[in-house]
Image (cartoon, rainbow, N blue to C red):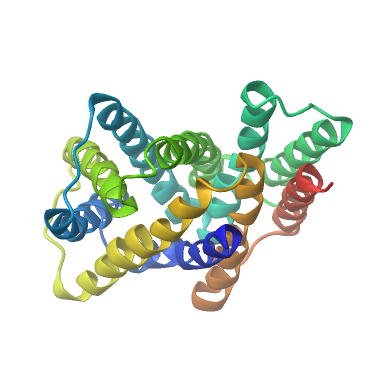
Length: 282
């Protein structure tokens, strides 16, 4: 059942980069609103189902909030600069960091298969980054998008691992209450970052439906399902199932925005997915 929740949650959040591209606001400001709207809705649930929070719980949710805030900060930029599909594939290099965490802290063996999988995935990243069809000086924003995508994978890993820890240690606390605290800290961080980037502006009526879809559909429903599943499976397994997200995002990017990638980019994505598959194959 936990795997089922992860699958459905991954499909839901795969629409996230598509919604981001539909909103004509600054990338950090979009992150603020999707987090703040989620917090407001979850706070209503909290008023009906209050639970005490100890100091450690607050520290963990603060760390998770900062991690997902930084994740959204770099990921939204990657989406706008390099495309929904590619940004999400690069962000999901989290599967390798999750595997490394399992080796270092959960005593999972570092096998030849895992080493090969990392090398294959790294080759895929090189294919994407060193593309003869792209002149670096003329496509600097694209390469910045790739860098932001790779940084997303690091921040995403810290978020997933912290959220998993919260789920395991505080299984008596409602998942909605956990996410409420995470989104509170996340929205505070993104508000200050948005102010520093001069992105603060009031959304117009046409943008609210997409912001609400992000805040409620993705941040609450999608991450409620994923959060529940994270506490029930190993990090490496969770990382594998979450790869449904980049596959979905790539498909939606092609269908809704006609995102076209070069041959090298397709090969690179294929190598990354091969590396991910090898890292999980028994």
